Structures are given as C-alpha cells and as structure tokens.
Amino acid sequence: MKRCGLSIGMLIVALVQASPGQIEVGCRLAASRLLLFEPIRATVRLANNTGHPLHFGGDNSTARLGFTIEQAPGVPVFPTDRRLWDGPFTLAPGEERELTVNLLSTYQIRSTGPYTIQARAEWGEKAFLSQKVFLDVMPGLDVARLAVGLPGAAQDTRVFSLKTLTRDRTELLFLRVDDENSGQCLGVFDLGRIVRQFKPLIQSDGKGHVHVLHQSSPWKFTHTEMNPDGIPVNSADFSAYSTEVRFEKTPDGQLLVRGIQKPADATLFQPPPPQMPTPAKGKKRR
Image (cartoon, rainbow, N blue to C red):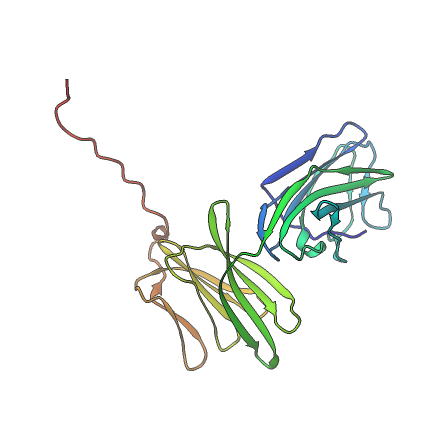
C-alpha cells in the first residue's frame, strides 16, 4: 500500500457520518492556503463501526487508507513512493483514532492552484470517503534571493529565496531552499510573522550558513540561521536600539548583527496595553 507522510492539522473539517457496519472517515487541513512546497499537514479521523478489527498495513492487512486528490475535476494527483505512516496499526471495533499526514511528501503536489482532497478508507469491497476539503497552493511574493556555493563543493549551489504569503489576515515570511544543479526544492520554512517597516536581510557567513533578519512585530526583530541544506541552526528574538539594523561580516567569516540587542524584559515584545479614556470631569448637563 502506498502511504502518505504524517503531521498535524486544524481548520477545514470534513466528516462522513456512518451507520453501524461502516467506517467513519474525517479529514481536516492545518491551513487551506499554503506556499508551494510548504508542508501540507492534514489530520485523518477514523472510527471503526464494522464490528471487526481493522488491520492497516503489514502482512495481515485487512483495510487500506489513502487519499483522493484532484487538481481540477477529473485530473488526479498521484501518490509518490513514500509511506503513509511508519508502521502497521490495528483499529479495534468501536475504536476511534486520528492520524496526522504530510501530503507534500506522499502525493505529487508540485504546482500552484486549487486542489480538492478526500481521505479514503477501504475495507473489503467497500470504500468510505470523507467530505472534500479544499486547498489553495500559492506562489507567494518574492522578497529577496541569495545563491550560496557549498563549502568544499565548488560545483554545488544552494538558492535561498525569501517569500511572503498572507494567511488568516497575517503576513508570513518563508525561506525556500533549492538545489540549483538538480532544480529540486529542499524545503520551505515558515519564519513567522513579518512587519513591513523593515526590509528583510539575507546574507551568508564563512561556513555557508544563511542568516535572515526580519522585523516580526513593531517591537521585535527575529534572527534565523540555516545550514546549506536548509536545516534550522538557531533562531533568536531581539529588540532594536538603532535605526541602522544591519549585518556585518568579520574578517574570519562570522556574521554579526548590529543595531539589535537582547531585551532585558521579555514583555518588551508585547504590545502596550490599550489606553482607557479618562472620564471627563465637570458639571452634568440638565
């Protein structure tokens, strides 16, 4: 059985009500609007009303779990060769269970556009589908781009791209990592909220690590460090004490951030409380 990579979800809920002798199948997405190659996290809910144990995966499998995904009506999205979950499991009669999945690694969702998704459980000759959930895969808005040669491998280059996407009325900053030679996207990473008062900075250090500095709230800057493969190394929040926030490279290749500092009080990162109007004093009108 082809499986589909697992992770968490929330947001769009779909559930098919089942009578005794059936399998209830539900599906919800962590987000209905995602950047291209961002992890697509979904949660599948299964309820066994068959009166029989259901064995998913393994040599004694009696049931199967997968997804029906279409990019347009009648245009199916096919699975990859990645597993749906790490090992077989059994759903006892009357038992309910939720599984989290990453559809990006297990289905060929490789282009922008709208998608419809249904979770699908099969038992014998019967198939049970969740209601449809809807996903919009977006290209995002390009902010900055940096090509970095890998240390010790002069022919290999990583391309780091900063992109923004608005989701749930919040503008988010993402870092996308591509291998220039193969054209393969190595990952897309959510760096959090961005405030447009300061243009994000991106620069590499002597180790080939990439550093991103962006304003994540009116009171906060976030510094993120990634290795050449796009794996996060460090992330820290700072407050600014200068209007000239910048990167500065030392002679030995280290990258320093100037104009920011660790706040003495973490509450500095919180917005000030709203000011309550002071009641006017004076004589009452008659």
